[in-house]
Length: 327
Image (cartoon, rainbow, N blue to C red; front, side, top):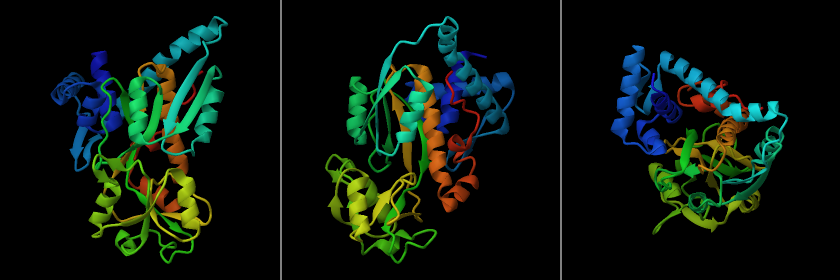
């Protein structure tokens, strides 16, 4: 087997998309398809099966993916193991990362614990700003959302991987008439006032993702409040001023509730990193953000049941193979 074919296979298995894998690897889609076909021919098995969402791994593909990830983890640990065996300390490294939400303190803390030589600088920013900083080299890593209604432009030299692809939820005041529903029909919120984040802007189109989601439910949202981050949203929710679309992983205080919706428009939570980020750090953070998302999902029983009922769709966050320890 060609090691490059395995690298391409890992990208397709991670993204469950030939198109996204090609973009991630800076290859043409036909080149990616050719390498996968060559790998399947050499092994004599089918590794992927097409479905309505893109592709899914066969049982043989899942086993190869597990083995390939184990091999990659071992290979990336070699420098740390060798340096440690020689009694040397790794060189200090300052990791500059940005996210869509400030609620990642546990990941920052775990980074310190796992990599004692790494100092973390963390900021909260919009996706376009974060990608621009990443492309310029002023950031090492970015965790953010990519909306189909406002697709992002990724710098050519930046690597990306999907944490999860999922539908938006809706945040409501705890006293809202629909707050007790297990799933909220978005059309029932057509007369509400809406909160939006300013980063939801693409060219001349303001808040394209919010408009696309609401259009599927048959209405145009009346946007009354626009502000950065979760603090302003919580303030408005607690006094019953508005509702808002939010990612499922957002955790809001008790005066607010977050519920699934009936819309089918999806959003991708991605992890992007600059080539100058050490590979063992990039891989560890990607795996840790996936487990962080899983931990958030487990705190919502209905959401967790939906995830467990769709293992292929949520394979990245359900998989337990990834080795989070780098030492």
